[in-house]
Image 1 (cartoon, rainbow over the protein chains, first blue to last red):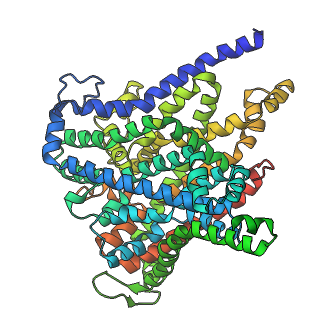
Image 2 (image 1 turned 30 degrees about the vertical axis):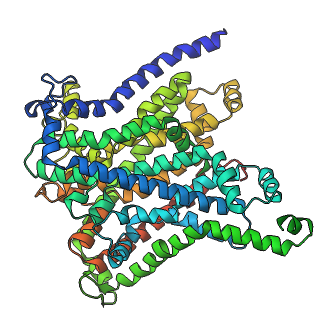
Length: 281
Length: 310
């Protein structure tokens, strides 16, 4: 081992110490939240990591004071529909843009990119009026149905993956008489499975954590998703309401835990996928 | 039949087949674009010239909404709040993301573990981030001020003092810096090692290597992170809304946390001023487009792109 590499190894020690300290800073709030949910009301703000009198009572209280099971079920259905719809439709569209040459393809793809820059607030009101006109306000449909028509960001992402596939296998299969649909479904899709999983995971997170759309479209408590429900819990038990922080904290944990699980289930897709977003963007 | 079409050179038939297939595959997007993008844009332009409360038909009022907008003190407040927040949050966010990425890049094989640790908080739903903001940044009992107190600093009332509301929100936004860190780290890992070796041979220290090699080489990713985050900061909604607005009477910090999209949302869906809210949306659109255009112009000078081909 040369002196230089040895020196480099030693300079790594302060770097690692700094990283460990930062990791504590980043993870601590999550641990704090979980720990607070296990404390009786009087001890929430004692900021101890290990609860002095650990209890599951807050979970029982939350379960009784808010229809959490219903909200979790609603969110699960909406999230599954939203993520599945966007993955399938965006894959179709991305394949259309990546594999086929036709007049107007360039300008149309330019439009796809342009819509990515469009602030969501601009279309918020007219989109609401469309769903209002169709009679879907108050239902879950507006929370996922738009995903049937692909989403610009995922089209962009998936197109990059489809472009990296060699063309020869497709030409060969075409000579064998395979239909275009079969080429897509049986050849292209299996080859790009990681990108499709990534799309599903991204959208699942976006859909699960969204507050804006549930605020706009859902009125009846029984239709709420968990973030919308959590907002209702904050309003009722938070600073403007009864100041029962233990209820708010526990509901926050219940809203967050599924996302942490989703992350660990798809960890390598998340991290690698986001890395490619930036370098290809 | 397919075999014949290929062997006998009839390019027009083949081209037609290819076009039809391509259009068929992108048809969901075409439909979605027309119904959920093009139409809403046109319709919202029309609505912005009307008075509309959903219950009765829109009535045409000309430029009245825009005139009202110019005079509305709430619009000025919301724009000013949003601008202040953006100017505070974006540089802070990008600098912290860059610092963390540089640090991770030095960590060698251990970087994977830390990358995960920085990323996990990003999974937290923004509503829950709003809750954490209220609790951890609580002026009297919060963990943040307790930590500052241990360092001998008397922490401010982050969640109730109007002057500290925006810094509090900007700080809490750093908690989800993980995605930006991952993007920048990937860019750092793409920088060819030879460039560093060459710089080292020339006697460049860490700071000079960073300034003359690293930053130019990752300027594309830095630009991406900056633009995306600026657009997001201009549309700040969920964290501020869940912490400071709602059905309850929690109005103590409302003025300082009245961001533009929150005002738009309340005008549209609480007050049912759909016409006015549409005009507000157009102003936001123009502002964001202008800011993005300026950033693009600046980036022409500052961003270095490798001659990469797609």
